[in-house]
Image (tube, rainbow, N blue to C red; front, top):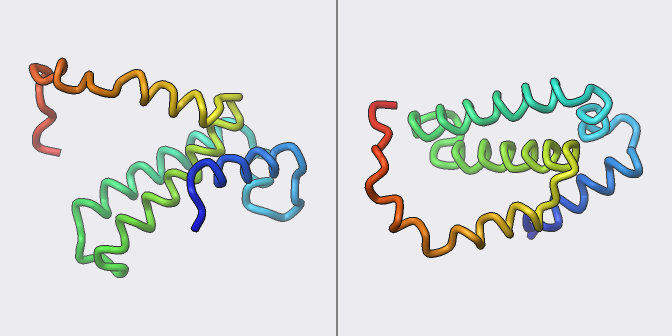
Length: 110
C-alpha cells in the first residue's frame, strides 16, 4: 500500500530524475499553469463524485477521484517546493483547534 509520504517522495524523485514519457514528467514539463488546471479539474471531479454516488464506479468514484486529487496536489507541492512535512506540520498545528472555530458560518447548498 502506498501512503502519502511515499507518493510525495516518488513525485519528487520523478521531478529530480524525469522519466521521459511519464505523466508526471509531462506535468512538470508543462509547468505550473497545467498543474493548477489539473488540481482544479480533480477538485471538481471529487465534488461531482461526492454529489453523484450512482456514477460508473459507484461508491468507488469518490475514492478514485480523491486519489487523483491527492496525486496532483503532490505534484503541485513539489513544483512549488512545498514539502509534505510542511503540510503535516500545518495540520499538526491545527490539532485541537477545530472547536475554536465552531462559530464560523457553515457552507450550505453546494
